[in-house]
Length: 272
Image (tube, rainbow, N blue to C red; front, side, top):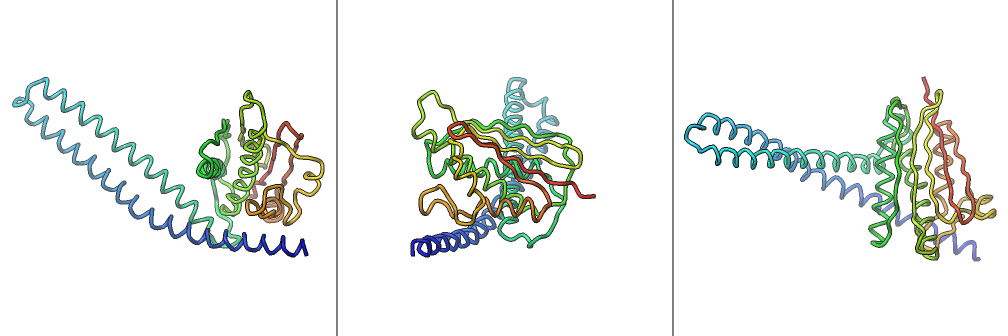
């Protein structure tokens, strides 16, 4: 009966997550439209500034040198601000497109993808999600992305889920350790990508609480979780293993020491 009740709670959580996924897709789509307006109007304003600069140059004999310098300084500042608006607006749209891809991407469709971009985006999405739920949560994230990674055919929404699952577990591990650790404990995480032969290697390491022997043995079991009821479904790691090994023909491995931390490594073969 306890197992049945636990399964029922897990299914309820899955249903909530499914509804949340649909809601997130709707919100992302609605946010994208005003963002497009912000970016387009910024570009138009940049053009107007350029036109204003030409007018000032044509009438420079009617404007004092001091006023001209002040006007140029102001326009340069405005131009830089416009560039930043466009840059960060495009960044926001890129994140939204990633969310939409995860929510509505075609099942099992392999698409040439930038692994570095996927990993980086979902590393920080996981971090900010943790911060949104706990304002005191903080962690030093060290990133090292290989510059020579080629585009590789993957199911991007699935690789995103895998990275997100691993990151969520890492964030939870360092947060939980921080609850009882001494003041000199500094939560840290290292993210690296590398190219070795025909394999792309992604590593996510943390200095969190690590795993006991029992957790190591049961890590990939369906519905097994160390998180409190309602905070974990116990499906994340089994889903991640299926994504990496069965769908993409890669490998998923880990090293963990209780009280010290955990390192997950997965590989993705580059198929020619």
